[in-house]
Length: 143
Image (cartoon, one colour):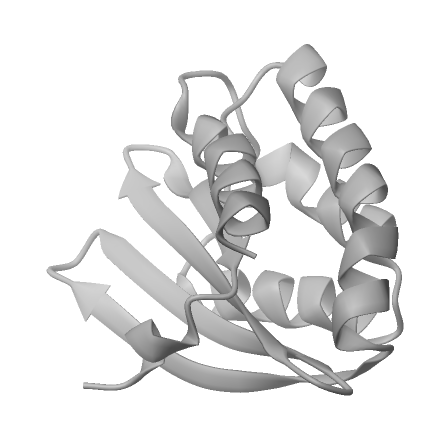
């Protein structure tokens, strides 16, 4: 399980590299985007969910497509271990100062949850999705 988590974390942390991205106007729009992403995750459309993030991520096309490919490869492994996706759940919103926002969600499977964390950064042009990750380190959800 830890190997799967590390692989996903490594892929998704790559999203913090520099690039050009569309921007969102405020934290409410960031939350709306994350909610839309998780709505697709809730029905098992992880690829569609990732494609919603693409305009707001600061990564090159090739890295994005690699990330999508890796998630596709991992989906059957996750389904065999955890069962079917049965929905998602918003957990919390945290801010650091005026320019960093973290949104945390659960992807609920029959037998195990996965944690999804989105990090938005406010630069001079607006809010971008700086990075996001998904893992099974559910212990991090508790104080």
